Image 1 (tube, one colour):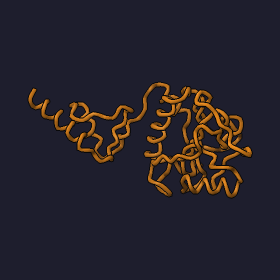
Image 2 (cartoon, rainbow, N blue to C red):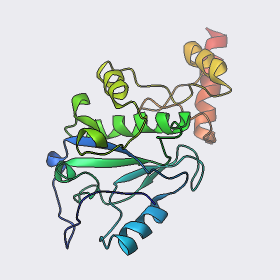
Image 3 (cartoon, helix red, strand yellow):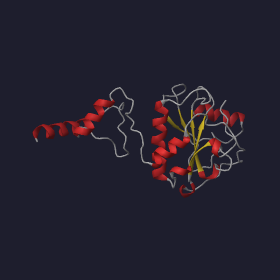
Image 4 (cartoon, rainbow, N blue to C red):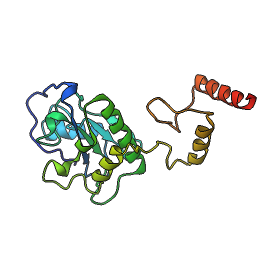
Amino acid sequence: MTVALGPEPVAMASRTPESIRYIVLHHSATEEGNVEIFRREHVEVNGWADIGYHFVICNGRGGADGEVQTGRDILKTGAHAPGRNQDSVGICLVGDFTKTKPTSAQILSLYGLIKSLMRQYPITPERILGHNEVNATACPGCLDVATIRSTIAQGKFPKDYEGHWAEATIKKVLELGLIHGYPDGSFRPDQPATRAELAAALLNLYQKLKG
């Protein structure tokens, strides 16, 4: 069973976007899980109003590997890290990181989620914390939060096609300007292309061949 520490108030308190200044990272301490499983535990076992986390990143056992699932409303105070619940976003990666490591897909999704949150809220790299930096706990296990902070501080967000079977091909078509990524910096290698995206790629190819 996943454990989120701290008493839950009778009603979830609302907060403003400006008050969200931290991210606290957790592992579920379970081999599998997803938002609905953890929500059921937190509501039925803990007696809370909702799941304690704002986001859950699956590991392929309960949800697709790397899938980001939305939990508690982000404009509601969390119940995951006493002392930081009021001003932080709680992100839980499914897995017991005292025994295993997060998957590559989970890490890529985590960086993407953090990047998105930093664009929306006043969160800076030094305010990305592991649960054990807030409370006395082994959570989030072997998740290297210090490296995550350092990588983000240097602006080195991993690409979502890194480690993909077509990584070399994707890099080449990007270098040639035949296909472009999305405004958020992602490529989404396994997402089906729309007719509009195909048209844009064909036009890019035509212009390269013509000119």
